Structures are given as C-alpha cells and as structure tokens.
Image 1 (tube, helix red, strand yellow):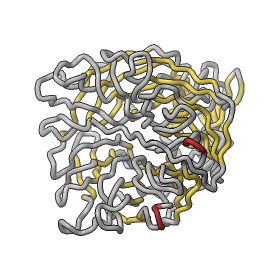
Image 2 (cartoon, helix red, strand yellow; image 1 turned 180 degrees about the vertical axis):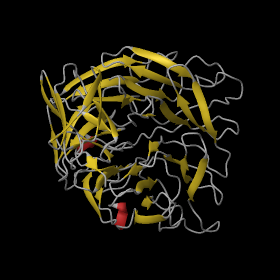
Image 3 (spheres, rainbow, N blue to C red; image 1 turned 135 degrees about the horizontal axis):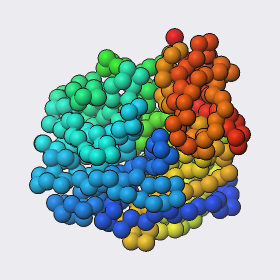
Image 4 (tube, helix red, strand yellow; image 1 turned 90 degrees about the vertical axis):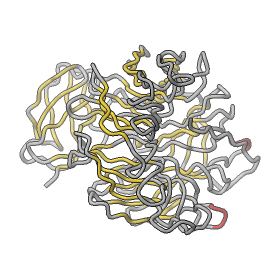
Amino acid sequence: MKRIVNISCKLILCAATAIALPAQTFTTIHSFDGTDGKNPYAGLIQADNGDGYGTTENGGTSTNCDGGCGTVFKITPGGTLKTLYSFCVQSGCPDGQYPYAGLFQDANGDFYGTTSAGGASGFGTVFKITPTALTTLHSFGGTDGENPWAGLIQGTDGNFYGTTVNGGADNGQGTVFKMTPGGTLTTLHTFCEQAEGTSCVDGQHPEAGLVQAANGDFYGTTSAGGALAAGGHGTIFKITTSGALTTLYRFCAQSGCSDGSGPQAGLVQGTDGNFYGTTSAGGASEHGEVFKVTPGGALTTLYSFCSQVACSDGSVPEAGLVQATDGNFYGTTSTGGTNRAGTVFEIAPSGTLTTLHSFVSPNAGHQAGLVQATNGDFYGTTWGGGADQYGTVFNLSVGLRPFVKPLPPSGKVGAVVRILGSNLTGTTSVSFNGAAAVFTEVSNSEITTTVPAGATSGEVQVVTPSGTLSSNVPFRVLP
C-alpha cells in the first residue's frame, strides 16, 4: 500500500503571496463504504457520457486481499456510484490489484488503466475495461518494469505511453514505456543506467505519468535521482517517441532545496507553452512548492507552501495541477490548511495563491488532483475521510462557466473529433476558430465532427439554445 505523508508544519513565515477566500461551494457527493471501493488514490476523468470514472486502491468485493484489492467505478455528477470491476477475482490476482492511477478513455469509448501489483508476475498490469469486461493487456515481469503507479496517456501516434516506478533492465529504478493498443510493450528508457553505487543522474523512480507537449515529445518527472549522491531529489525530463531522454532539471540544485524536492506528480503544459507542477518537499519552508519550467529546463519557483502560520495555506502537494478555463491552475495539498487535513488551492501563473477549501477529516489524505468538468465545476477524491473514513468524491464550484472539450485536442483537416460538453441537445453550429464544421449530435453530452477545410488553430465554439460554449484549450490544427 502506498504511504500517507503526514508532516507537521513549522510555525514560520516566508516571503510568499497567499490569499484566503471565504468558503466556496463544496459538496461531498459520495462516501465509500468499502464494498464499493476504498481509498481512491487517483483523481477522476470525465467520460463522453458526462459521468466521472476512477479507481480505488483498496476495497471491493474480492476476498483475496486484506481490505479488498481495488475497484474501477463510475459516478454521476449527482453522486450515484456504480462499481464496474473489483480486482483480484481469482487466486493470485492475475487481473491485477491495487490500482493507484486513474483512467483514460479512447475514441472507442473504452477505458485503460494500470494496477500497481498483481498480474502474472505480481509486478502490476495494464488493462482495458469495457462496459462488459476487463482485459489484462500486459503483465509486467521485472526487466520491462515493475509497479506502475501512474496511468497511461495516448500519444498522437495512437500508442499508449506510461511509466513504472521500479524495474527495468539495468538497476531497477523505473522505466518509460510505449505500448500498442493490442498490448505489445516496448521499454523506451530504463532509469539509472549507471553502475550500482553511482548517482542516478538521469533520475530514479518516476511515480507520475507523462504529458505529450505541443512539439510531440513527452515530459515527466522522477521522484528521486539526479545530480546528487544518496539518491538525489528528483528530476524533470523530456523523452521522444523513439526513447531519447534528456534531463532538463535536477531538483535541490539550490541551497536547502529551496527549488523543491521529490516531485511525485506529473506536469501540465500551460497555454503559454511552459510546464507547471508541484514538489512534495523542499521549497523555502520545506513543505513543497509549485513551479514553472520552460521547455528548455529553466525553473522558477512560483510558491512555497507553509508560508503562513500553522501551514494554513497547505502543505505537501503530492498531486499535479490542472489549468482551468480562467487560465489559473488548481490543485490540492495532502496536509496543512486550517484543519491540517489538506486543501484545495488556486494559483495564478504569476504565483499568487488562493486557498479555496480546507478539508476537515484528520484522515483525509488528499493525494489526488482535480478535474474540471464541462459544467465548469471541479471534482476530486480524498483517500480517507467520509462517513466510514474510506474516502470520498467531492464537487467544488467556484463559479466558472461551462465549456466544451475537444478530443483529441489536435488533428489534421478531416480528422474526426469528439466534442464533450453539457446540455448540447439542440446545437445549431460548430466551428474551429471561425471555420464552420459539419457535426452530428450524439447525445446531450457529446458531438462528433471533423476538422473542416480552412480551419486554423484556436478555439472550438459550439452554439446551443442556452448560449455559445468555447473550448477549454485551443485546438491545434496539425499540418
């Protein structure tokens, strides 16, 4: 089972900017009871039907693991939850156990994910789940990686990309891999290619997944390794689809690790082209930070947590960020806040931080990040807390407007694009940066279309009876 970090804050003040707002509209929409799942470590995704989908690390109906082996679930915006699958239905858990990561949905509507353990060799799996069945696509065997703690992303080439926190052909410090939709896996990079006893200058133990940037390369983090001896403090790296890895930044390059240490989360590419992320430790107060890094590796610390008395602004951010439709970034901390149970925060690209919500339960453990649904609200999970202390799903509304989400977010002229949204029934027009497109209304939450001739990169707009909805990110028209 994954550890829960619980660090008491130092009562110190640091030179940083933070603003506390009155309580937002926060609602717990589901409390897990164990049989329907327990301890959701990862966040949610919004599927094409408008519902949220996710995993729980433990719980479910299997009796082959103490406390359950984990689940896959779906949940409506109103909080009605359905368990889709309970892991380890057979002795030995050949289907996997303990999914730490979230899911992604492909164009066919199927979901893909990973389990951190189980499978044929006990080192974790990659799986596909449809409305009717779960299929194990790959079981890790050690030399090809061990223990994927992160989920997958689908590259523009149609293949899946991910990381394992351990394993690999060399010193067993983790891998980056590519996998075809059919399950053929290729290891792109094994970390710590140096001999035993030397510093892993390329990093160790990538706990987080990857993000594909606008230039087609993938970017990620390792939680340890780097330039320093005794393990290092983590790295930021770039890797191409062919496996050429470049270390862009090594944390703790500054005295006292004021630039951060131990990133457990991945990166998000902002609309300005830079990457944004968090470290779980380091920073001016040694309780983690939010940073910006350019594609070339120049890092700027935007905010150091525990800059207020008793860490009322939060402490130890273990999850990544999401850039919302207002241009600001939103995230969570696992401890700190007015109740020392974690927070939800907003941070501007300039570094001004606003604490939006302080959790109450002392056992909440907020490792997961947020998702902004197309209704404008944020949804997330807590590892613990709730009626049975097994975790919750929550909604946080900060008054942001509804939007539409094109999937994929880029494509050539003629490419098929799904547009997800809310209240799409009766749509009268769809356009790509002003170029009108032919579309089909699939449901109240989905439209299908093709990139029209003459389209250029920019906003996708959908005109509905209730108004015009714009895309949350600019759509990139590929050459």
